[in-house]
Length: 388
Ligand SMILES: Nc1ncnc2c1ncn2[C@@H]1O[C@H](COP(=O)(O)OP(=O)(O)O)[C@@H](O)[C@H]1O
Ligand SMILES: [Mg+2]
Image 1 (tube, rainbow, N blue to C red):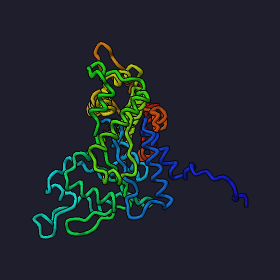
Image 2 (image 1 turned 120 degrees about the vertical axis):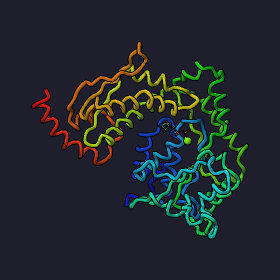
Image 3 (image 1 turned 135 degrees about the vertical axis):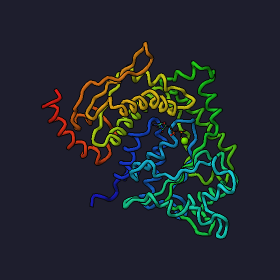
Image 4 (image 1 turned 45 degrees about the vertical axis):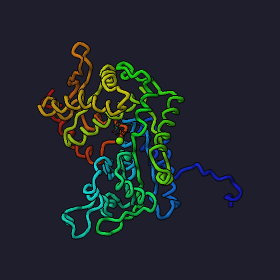
C-alpha cells in the first residue's frame, strides 16, 4: 500500500555507493565526471545488473599527466578494499617483448623457466585482495598506447570476454574485475591548448580555474587522439571514456591540503607510540604551492615539492631526535633563506589533542591512536611532574 503509482527516483543511490562517493570526493579533487562514472558502474554491479561474461567495467582514462588518473583507481581500491595498494598495475611500456609477456601470463609447460614464473595475471593474483565483503579486483593498464601487439591482443580478450588464457592453458576469469586503462595520448595537443605560449613563466603560474571552453577543448583533443590511435574494435569495448580535467590553482591548493593530511597520517602510522603533529603557516603553504606548480606535470610536481621541502627535512628531524612524540611543530617560510623553517611550538600533547590539531579529514588508521592514547596518558602525567 502506498507504493503504487508513485514516481520512483532512479537517481537515488544506495548507501554503499554513497559511501564510495564520499570517500572518493574526500580524496580526489576536480574530477567529478570520473567519480560519477565509477559510481554508476559500481552501483550497477551492486544491483547485480552488470552484463554477464564481461568485466564489471572497462574504463579508458585520458588527460594530462598528474591529473589523478592513477590516483582515482587507488582511491577506489582504498574505499572498497581498505588498501590503496590493492590494484594490479601493469605498466604497458614494460611488456614489449614476448619474454616480458611471459611475466604476465607465464610460459607454456616444459618451457625453460616455466616453474619459476608466477604469472602476474593469474586468478590467485587477481583475487588476492578480495575481502569478506567485497569480491572485486582492480586492474590498471597504464600507458596503453605503449602496449605491444601481443599485450594488445590479451587486453582485447579481457575487455570483451573477461577471460585470459595463461601459458599453461589455465583460464583467468575477469568478470569480477574493473579494468582501468590510462593513456597520455593527446598530451602534447592538450599542453598546446593549456599553455599556448609555453614559456617558463606561463608554466609556473596556473590559472585559478581552467575555464570551461579550455576544458572542453582538452576533452575533444583527448578523444580525437584516442580515436585516431585506437581501433574501433578496442573503442567499442570501452564502457566509459573519461578525459581528466587539467588542474588549476584552486585544485592544486586543495590537493596540497590533502597531501599534507597524508603526510600527517603517515607520521601517525610510522610514529607508532610517539607521533607528533605539524602545522603550516600560510606563508609555508604558499611556498609549497609556488614550488609545486608546474602545469605540465599537474599535481605530480606538487607532490615532489612537498617531499623535497617538507618530508625530507621532517625525516631528518626525526632521525636526529630533534622532534619527539607529542611535539607540535610549526612550519613557516623564511623569505631570506628561501626555505621552510621548523620550530617546536608545544610538547607532550595528548593524542586526542594532536588528532584535533592535525585536523585530518582522512581519519588516522585504526589501531594507531588506540596505541598512542595510552602512551600519551603517561607522558602527560610525566610532563606535569618533571618536565615543566
Ligand atoms: N585530481 C586529483 N585529486 C587528488 N590528488 C591528485 C589529483 N591529481 C593528482 N593528484 C596527486 O598527484 C599524484 C600524481 O597523480 P596521478 O594520479 O599519478 O597522475 P596521472 O593522471 O598521471 O596518473 C597523485 O598520487 C596524487 O597525490
Ligand atoms: Mg598515471
